[in-house]
Image (cartoon, rainbow, N blue to C red; front, side, top):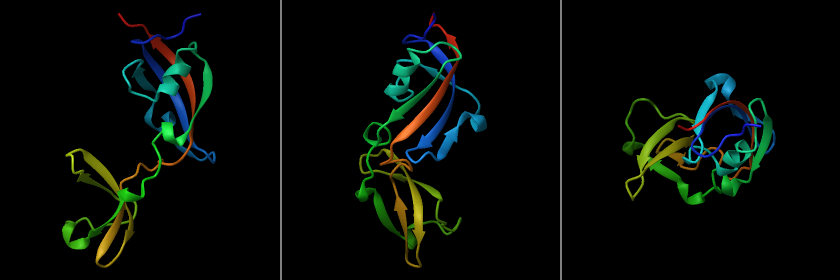
Length: 145
């Protein structure tokens, strides 16, 4: 039985679901993903599941919101005066914008509401506050040198 270890690179397929079962991501669109275990590239719960799998194995991994994208934070929903935005492209709900946090770190904001004087933008990850499930299939193991 060959299972991956820290440092090995694995190729996986996955389907990502919200807690209600809605599919919000999968590798059918992006192609199989390669991940090096032990590098913090994926959720620790998925790394742990992969270390118990053989090539061709399938597993569902449920991750609670606090261990996934964290809780929703109301302070990350802000109003931005329209005069602080460039005129083009015109803001639309769902549009992503880049901002800078006070500590200099980048933050992606998603416009949720457009008014005449301001727009409401949300800096939470779209899956913040939600439990998620990854259905993973291990396709290949490349052992570390």
